[in-house]
Length: 462
Image (cartoon, rainbow, N blue to C red; front, side, top):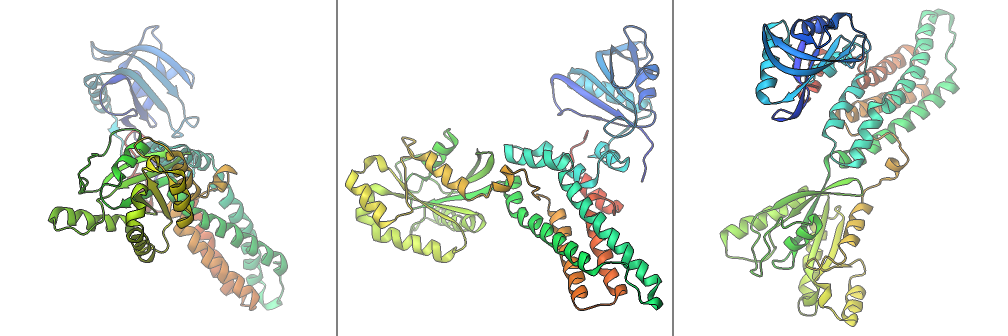
C-alpha cells in the first residue's frame, strides 16, 4: 500500500483567516510546487535545501494568484517521509480555492482524510498507535487529554508494547527451536525465566487495561447529571459552574422541561453537566416527558448531583430522604453528591443539624456562588489522576483496549500451558496469537480495512 502520487489539501481550518496553509506531499511535490511558484530571487525550488523558506508568488500562467511563503521538506526528513511543500498564502477562501485548483490541474489529487498521517505510517515515520495519537492531539480540549495524546505520540505506549513483544518473541523463537529438535527431547527456553516473563507481561497488561477506565473518562469527559425537585436551583447551579447564563432561571416551578448540557474543564479534566427537569408528580404532559428524560440522563451519567433547597429541610426533610433512597436504590453503583443549595439563608444551628442528618452534604449558594469550588473538588476526587500525575501510560483508544484484552487472554493461556506441562507446539500457537495482538496495536500487523477505519476519522489535511 505504498502510495507514490502527489496529494494536496488545506492544512488549516476551512474559511477565511489571516493566512492559510496548503500542503502537498508526494514524489513530485516539489516539482509541482516549482511549476507554479515564482521566487522573488528567481530561485528554483527543486534545487533548494530541505527545511528552507522561500518568498514569491503563485502564478497561473501569467496571472498572479497570491504572494506566498513556501516551506520545503525533502523526504525522508518530512512529516510524511516524502517530499513535502507547504504554501502559506493569504486566508481568503477564493485564494485557497484558486491555488488548490491550480495544483490539481498540475498533477495533484485531493488528499483523503488522514492521508498525510497514513503516509507517515506507511513510510515508517510513526507506528499505528502514534498515528492515532495525532488525531487525539488535534481533538484534545483539556490539559489531561492533551498530556495523554502527547505522551502516546512520543511513543510512550508503543515503546512499552514493543519491549514486551520483543521479550516474548525471543522466548517464542526458543520454543519454535525446541520443535525442530522434538525427537532429542531438549529444552532451549528456561521455563522458570519464561514464567517470570509471563507474570511481568500479565502485570503490565492488567495495568494498561485498568487505565482505560481513567483514559476513557479523560478523553470523552465525565457526564454529570444535576437532579432534584423543581425550583431548588439546578439551573442556577449550572450557570454558576459555567460562569454564564446558560440555563433559564425562574421562580416558576418546572421551568426546565428538557435537558440542557454544557462542558466545563476542572483541574484539566472535562466534565459534561446535564441540567435536568425537576422530579415531581405532575399532570403536565410536556413536563412528564422531561422528567422521564431526567431518569434516562441519570442512567447515562457517571456521577449524579442531587440538589435540594436546604432552607426547606425542616418542612420537607422526610420527603427528601425518600427521594435520596430512591435514587441510591435505582442507581447503586453511581457516585452520588448531595448538595444543599440556598445555604446563605441558614442559621448556624440549622447548618449543624443538616450536617448531623446528612454527613456527606456539601452546602452551597448557587445564586451567590458560595461553595461551588467545594463541589468542583468533590467531582475531581472521583477521577483517579494519580497515573496522570506520575506520567504513566494511560489507554484511551477502544481498539487498543480490545487488543490488550485479547493479548492478556492469550498470555494467561500460555501461563496455564506452562503450569500444566502443555506441549511446546500448542503453547507456540497461543504465543503467536499474543504476538499478533501486540502487533495489531503498533501496526506491525495490519490490513487495508483497519487502516481505512482508523484514518477515515481524521480531518482532511492531516
